[in-house]
Amino acid sequence: MPKNSNFKKYLGLLVIMFCLPVVSFAQLIEIDLPKFGLPETDISTVAANVVNYVAGIISTIAVLVIIYGAFIYLSSGGNQEQAEKAKKIITYAIIGLVVVGLAWVVVTAVARIF
Image (tube, one colour):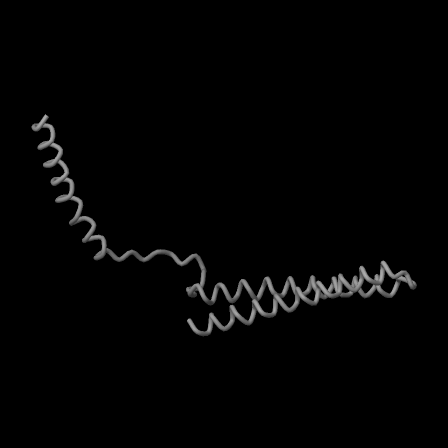
């Protein structure tokens, strides 16, 4: 059993001796990879672009929901249930707009800091 143990130790030592120089020489190799037409931007810029895009879409949807709520309110014809339903729709849409606006402000501020 001790012979097998020594063999494993020497085999491990040989593997380490031959692999470490390869790893250290990997830093000397410069490869010119194709850029595929993509811009070189950092993660904060990408996050800001994604948030701007999503905020624009969600804001558009929220405005459409406000218009829908206003239509329901105007067409309620004195029906209190329909009027309350429309008020809730408009209130939730405005809350959604505020949340999207605050998220945009936070991400934009963080992107400018970093």
